[in-house]
Image (cartoon, rainbow, N blue to C red; front, side, top):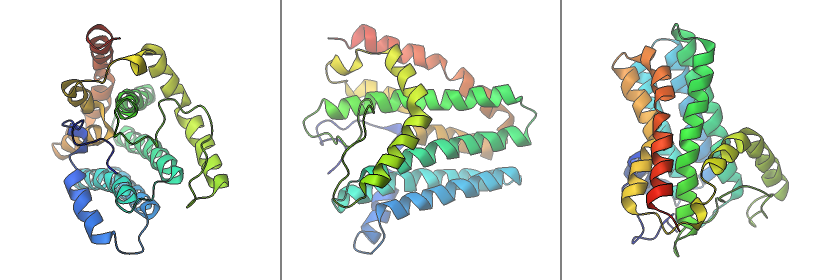
Length: 257
């Protein structure tokens, strides 16, 4: 099952890796490879990118960040293709994302003259931006008839595990996810508490907000690394926060009850 029905799909610029992910899934869907194993692969790709940054191989790092984005799309694509959704994959995916985001930005800080405060601000900025995109995207999926609903608008309680997974594993991953993301989730919810009650978001709005998606963020980092602009990456993402106000303002003023 796709995340959205064909009628509700929008141009998601952060999801540029989807065609490559589908091609990969088509080749492995009849094998013993599981969605969670693909999640491990994207984690490995992210670690290779971090290693490459630390050793000055910036173009290689950019390539592996793109590969990470493709595999990040592929694990969910595989789960939907073989009709095997799981909360294990849902939470593990997000846990890997936040750790890899931190490590990538920490590696950039380590090889540049940036301050630690700037690096932490950039990390918090990346997470807030991605959380806003995910918040609106999950709301859209819940407010449309054919939307996938494995992800919750607000993660407030441990979900019941699917038959293919362990409840104990789901509980542990949920608690870990909640600990890592709760501050970002609550901040975005506080900034736009009424979003879930709004009409279905128009496609142009979702396309606009998708520049805050993790895939597009990693694409920006990859391009800047490849162009030798590594010193500008951390300040860029702090400045990129200005669009938080713009996007939330558009939603509250133009797309309301």
